[in-house]
Image 1 (cartoon, helix red, strand yellow):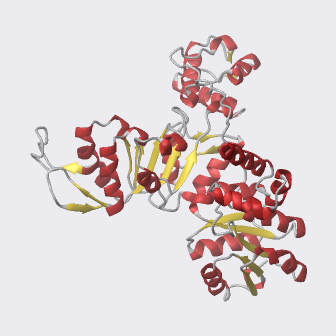
Image 2: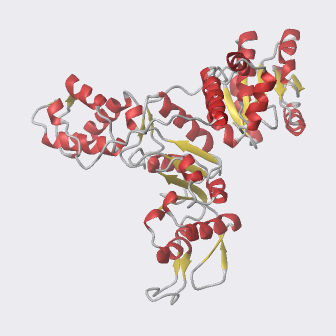
Image 3: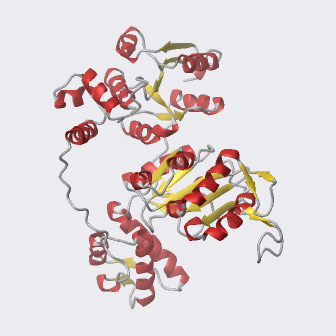
Length: 452
């Protein structure tokens, strides 16, 4: 169908959004209907048919969970299963928006959007263009190092979707995950799918920088500023001009270093050590840490105002032990790479070897698997890798098992129960309230109370 013949419904409780979309689409489509109250959706769908619905993720200003959006998406799909739905969301709700794709949404757009991007997404939905198909890998470009992002698991597919959505923006991204999960690869994929792809990608392991080197390395210095400053030197932020700077192990920097970094991010300027002249910077910031967001936020050693600065969107990479058959996919990939590197014949992976790989817990994650396969390829005496060929490094130790804690605080028990029930019902407020034995209004009050 052509866009000019389309009838579109826009549901959002923000009058400014409704006005902006109406003004944008009025010349483009046959009819556009706007609605502030999602409760009117069923009656609107009974009165007429729409080719497309733009649906907000949140409708209650004090409750910012996106569950209402998912609820009304499901309701639309029950009433009009063939109607295309595009979700409207904010950066902080991208995980929920990705969930909406599994619930039947065609796509989602992030506020604030580019008008051309929104129209293109609407045109794709109207014309029935197929959504992006499942992929086993994410190879940003031919210039990426040998080990690109690979994965068929649901968790990795969600990460691929998120990368494609956030890469073209300038949003600051926090990448979370255990050591060896591939945080740097995710950072490179974001950069190479961004509008800054032809500019520098600069990585800094800030956790390894001493107090004395931190400012000089990141912000630069003037000749004579300190004993070894034999010439003027630009810092990493200046070196990354127009491109992306990736600060690895951000969770390990001191409060003093955090204060300096926060000042740079707020002012978009650096001052070289030994001068008082501010230098404007234009970079996209990506950060990574092996700490969980909860640990980072609860740690008295990390500033929450800096967390908000670096974490417009977060991406959490799952440990390899939770990625199922991705283990075999990655193992075969590494076999091919190292067989070529060490001039070995094409190798196969025996069934017992596959079973051994799947049983292992991988404290070192993908990095450990990579080294285990490299060693196996080197030592293999035949073209079929056996279970005996697969040896894991003794330097890695299994992650400590979390002690079971019995919660006795009534409020925490209620909060945990509400979370579990909402998750079980996929965010459906009506079903969750029914299971909890309370009204939807009472459930909303508790969500607001516990800031869920």
